[in-house]
Length: 263
Image 1 (tube, rainbow, N blue to C red):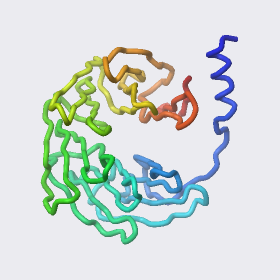
Image 2 (image 1 turned 60 degrees about the vertical axis):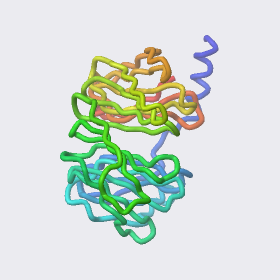
Image 3 (image 1 turned 30 degrees about the vertical axis):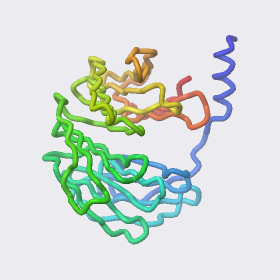
Image 4 (image 1 turned 180 degrees about the horizontal axis):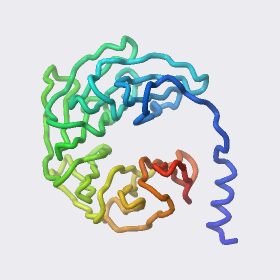
């Protein structure tokens, strides 16, 4: 066995092999699940128009957040766990206080469904991506509900957005992953030739994973855009991708009903 094969086999021995807990309570499909920063809690959202905060270690439902008028598609926790931000089919971004469940502000500006939302590192700015072909940024410290910046260079729906200290990175159905350097005001476009519905950064932030609607996950060098690897095996659309926090592997889930672990 090669050294890489041996490493993969060793890593596989430490992966979970059985279900640890079921978190039941949503009335309908669950559209996103996110751990908070320290991994002690997780958030879920879905078709029933609610957000739910869970203790995944005990299975306890801690709190339910209700205010969205339609399905909730994404949720993200601030780094200090004090605030939440959520988005969905009602075209608005909701900014929540975790402990009270109160909506602090509703950010507006998208004219269609909102697919993805993230806090920046300092929890001062929220960035969203929507079906209206835009990425929009909102200032949490301001009393205004309007965006402070709008990026509208996409040719189709924007499905996923991630942030680094200096960049906004977004994947679109137009087949591109676009990186916006906030300091330099520069846009870099990587054209993958297939609709992109989910993106994720590697743990060292040097590589970018892009999940495309041809059931293929593509690994790119974030700096050069070079295609480093393609991962094929799912029979249907891949719906999510993530890196294992400590092992040299990634996980993908698909409409085909499977979760796969990749070296």
